[in-house]
Image (cartoon, rainbow, N blue to C red; front, side, top):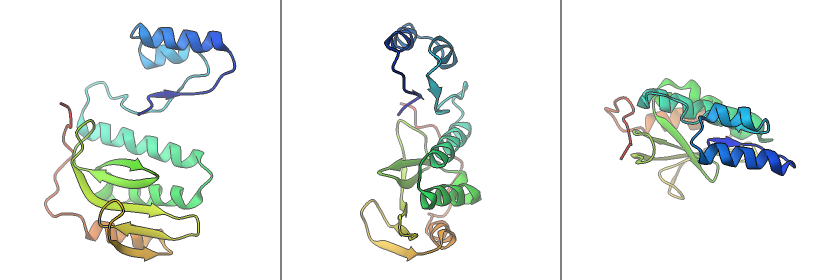
Length: 163
């Protein structure tokens, strides 16, 4: 999971970033040492509060969705975030599939639901990764509302998945 990213042709800047990382510098100090470095927004929660970590990951996914040329994916992430029942969960992606957990990384407690955006303006909800398709629709709202209906009952707030 990338905490920082960026590109540069200047190997001296790359060396400064690597040295700062090696020396244990704070993420903001690394970006100060090497201007090409971009903070991803992941895990910049000082107290590691699970709810704030989940919000941090949502913010990362929203930023990422804005940066890719895929309007359907952006619509999916935005619609899922707008839904309070999903927003209170810890989101993560694998192969651009939006998934959810009741605990934060590194030990995810995965809810077996997968939301996918397709480039042909379709959205699907599956019962698990590569599992039974529960809905295949042309509206993101239908996919998200179906996901909410399939959430297990009694979900509490996100918990820490720390070792």
